[in-house]
Length: 499
Image (cartoon, rainbow, N blue to C red; front, side, top):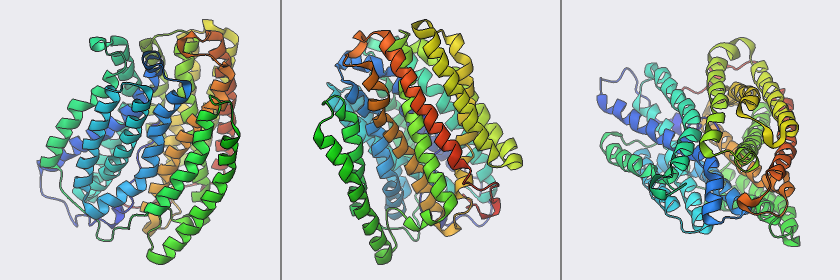
């Protein structure tokens, strides 16, 4: 689960904004409701799955590596398609790509709900992530061209509220649907619930959303996307499958060769930038110290988040023997603290204290992680929800202090003409970090549980694996804290893009 809001689409700043107040038009407010519903659906779908993982594993007989791919496959496909999805909307029309993405997302949700085996579920989740990458980048771009500048503050406030609501509701909805076992379908309703929402969104979106394109859209970079995908898979696939396959030599060879693929990717991107100015990644941005450091923060924090939310769910359900609803309710303090801290950080704290707020967030989250680590080791399988609550409040508050203000802080020193590319890269980096963290769970978590299968694993083994993985989470937060010193002390609001 992550509460980071999607960054603006790449060429949103090129879109012609209305020169003055737009005439009263109820259509655009209906369109806004549709766009916010799509964002809510995507966020809930990203957070709803973790709580149902034990049920999925029991029902389908999925291995631990398949379970990792159910979550990591979505994050990876989403990340790799985000920039290209934004560019496709700029070229062919944002409404068209939004509806196409929503239609594909709805179809993929149906395939997930009807999956007959783990392989089909993983494939459908990858498709779902790819369709989300077409849908999500259009949301902020459409908002930008549909509302005049004086209304955008109100609109983005509503957008932020939806993000917070999704963070709270996702695990609870997942828990209720899984525990309710509607029609004997067990975990499947967590995906099938998207069908009526998606169909309504397509019908209403076709009627009320206004079409727009960017006047100077960047071209697609299919070769760059292919190279980035290959390099990432050469790292993630051996990490995820290696433990189950006995850590074969080919896995280490693939991981060792991945830096050479990334080197080819960098050379190609430089050549692409010289040729037509449309590389997948604008490498010159990494010469800006604050942006490079911010990308490092986003990557590391994404990995920490991906690893933590997976092991937390498995600890509660497989280690402590709690049901989905019990686990979901235990997560409420985390979600509420995260949402509250996010709102306070942006509105009250960051304008006064600057980057110290983010650093305090990392330390607060670290203290919560260490408290949880101590409790898991001290109480073992007897740990209760109320005992876990203080650690969850600390971790949620710490995360909220980081995720809400970090985008503005990182992009504050990026030139306005590159703000779209920078925000696309920044959001992609967080998703890639999440996929990496899920891949690392093979080493940090599953490797400690031993060669056991499904719910037959002793609770004590999962408790031990949780404490081991929490040391990894804590180490990642220490790295995040250190990188935050490289961000600007204060956000230069006058340089921020008017999105």
